[in-house]
Amino acid sequence: MSELLLDRTRCSVAGTLAVVGEKWSLLVLREAFLGVRRFADFQRMLGAPRAVLTDRLGRLVDEGILRRVPYQDEGERQRHEYRLTRKGVDLYPTLVALMEWGDRHLAGEQGVPMELRHRDCGAPVHLTLTCEEGHTLEGAREVHPVSRPTTGD
Amino acid sequence: MSELLLDRTRCSVAGTLAVVGEKWSLLVLREAFLGVRRFADFQRMLGAPRAVLTDRLGRLVDEGILRRVPYQDEGERQRHEYRLTRKGVDLYPTLVALMEWGDRHLAGEQGVPMELRHRDCGAPVHLTLTCEEGHTLEGAREVHPVSRPTTGD
DNA sequence: CATGCTGAGTTCACTTGACGAACCGACGCG
DNA sequence: CGCGTCGGTTCGTCAAGTGAACTCAGCATG
Image (cartoon, rainbow over all chains, first blue to last red; front, side):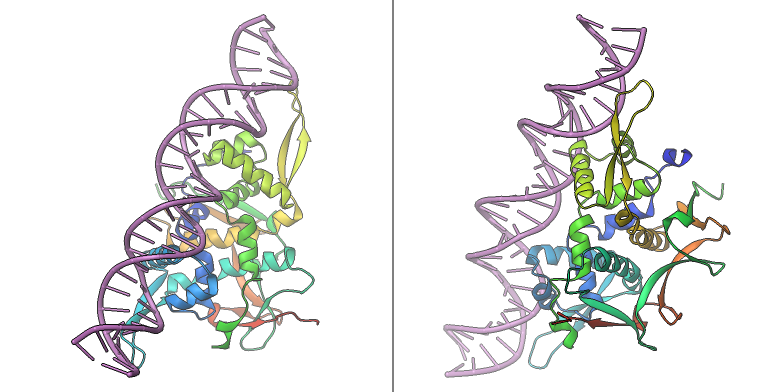
């Protein structure tokens, strides 16, 4: 029960959602992981309103999740494209987690829309909970949350 | 480049976000994983407007992620509490993924607010990408997405 | 040189959603 | 009976998302 009394204002879940929890943000990132880089392509793939897309891309750049990189096609003026930074690439497990849940609980009779394979061996890839001792955990019941309020003082 | 032309309307990321992507939904679930079950406790921990909380809880129940369970304290009338279903528990990796990203990229000088430990051995728990051959992947670069459009017909 | 096209935005009117405070109704209690 | 609590609902306001129209730079075309 003591867990219920913890301060959760600094919770990292809330923090992350404050950064990427707005509508379209995670879908923009999904596209980025699938190789989309240009404004028009994001727009075409997502169908999001342009104003929202402008805002989300700008915000993700501000947060250091995407970076704007200039490029110039032949016979075209210079434009810029959006690429994942390290910080952005680190969001990959979040997208995989969302995808796996949808695959398990929302996929219709057509099966899952997309599979992730290990580039080296071709085997399907999954997210697993593991501890630093090397054990594989089956689920949330085997995890014990420990609060660390203001450690170090 | 062919990836760019895939149909992504059935994408599981989008599907999952349609279910739990609204504001507060994932924070409600965070609280549920930390043991919160009652309306008033959700409200107190989150500070969300009551109308929104009513809506989100109802929606999560409709989606089969939470279920309403009647209970009765001594000297109290019967009420009901909200508990995670199997489908809800399966969202745990999503929350862990969000938390780990926040821990890595948003934690200030106070360190991370909460740690997850293996209940059995006490070691810190992390999400890892693994393939069915048992390899541990370092990140998104080692994953190859394979579309499976309308398999089976 | 005027015209048009394209990518990337911006502006605008409209609808939807979030917010916070007030109100409601069932129930147990003194 | 009046009071307090829990779990909601209602309401006015304000922020956010939506889609269509407009803008603007620069290359290309006639």
